[in-house]
Amino acid sequence: MGTVQKAHEECGLSYNRCRWCGTASFRRLLCPVCASSELEPERTTGHGVVVRTAVVHRYTEAARNESLVRFPEGFVFRCQVVGAAPQMVTVGARVKPLAGEEPESSGAVVLELCEPPAQRDWV
Image (tube, rainbow, N blue to C red; front, side, top):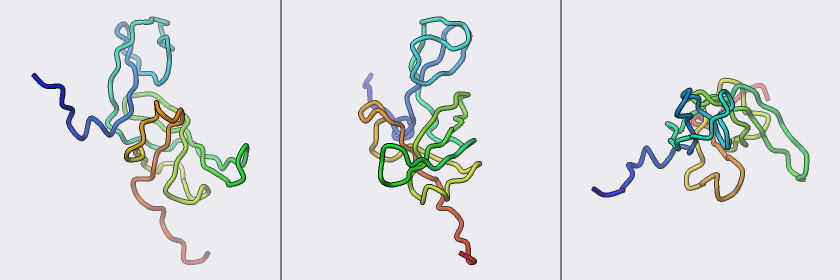
């Protein structure tokens, strides 16, 4: 059979799942629970939820957003969220991987908002 991947499989992030305890982890050499080195690569569904967010001004002239994002597979990872002003990314916002961006190539995980932030009339 061929090795053609479906479009929905290509959009997710690649992570590892421990063969022994089933714990999902992202960018780890050993399982964070049982320290096993027997990790199998899998792909996420692609969507996550922001659980913590901060605006960062370090090392760049422009402000950027760094958020902790929880994925449905069970792991949390620090990512950069784009698609809105850094201060407009809120806890509970749904995010997805940036189209055409593979995190292994750039070193940083960049996600974008699934829905644009709500406009405030009073601003």
